[in-house]
Image (tube, rainbow, N blue to C red; front, side, top):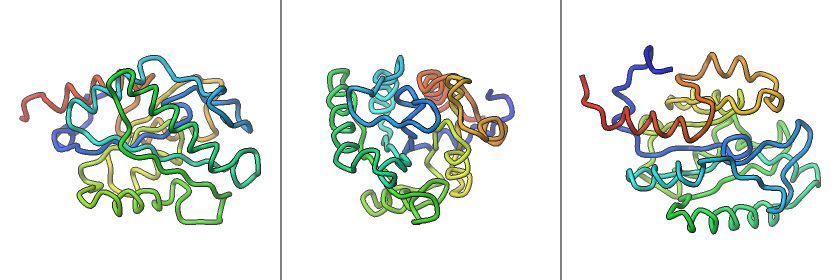
Length: 199
């Protein structure tokens, strides 16, 4: 879906924010969480897509709500171990994530749970040149799209498996600037638009 998009902003993209569950790995059924690396199922084409972003000189940042920590289903250390293992997997494909941020809180307890923008603020503290105007948010939920739109980013919705979509997914699909079946498909189009001649 690119016909209605003003692609001028795509040419200036420098940072891609990615949700995790449902974008990088298979989402668990609603009410369940990925609690360990053994349960993490990387989606097809994800390492290759991240590698393409890396080689295009784009920063890749993961921002993920992990409410299961607040509910005592797993710990911050468990999440960090998953991310370390995922990073090791990416390295085998010549790819990497520049930073991982996650919100460990329950609803209404913080300023970092998407769609609130605390994780963007954390990223800006670590990477001073990050600007929402030159960033895109790729996610599979309404909170992801609202996070990006609230900051003025390009927003991309990943459709994923219809049986595992969160409530509000259809609204998110309409609100997003673009939507694709997978991260791999989204990255291919983004990079093609980015290098296309500007009108």
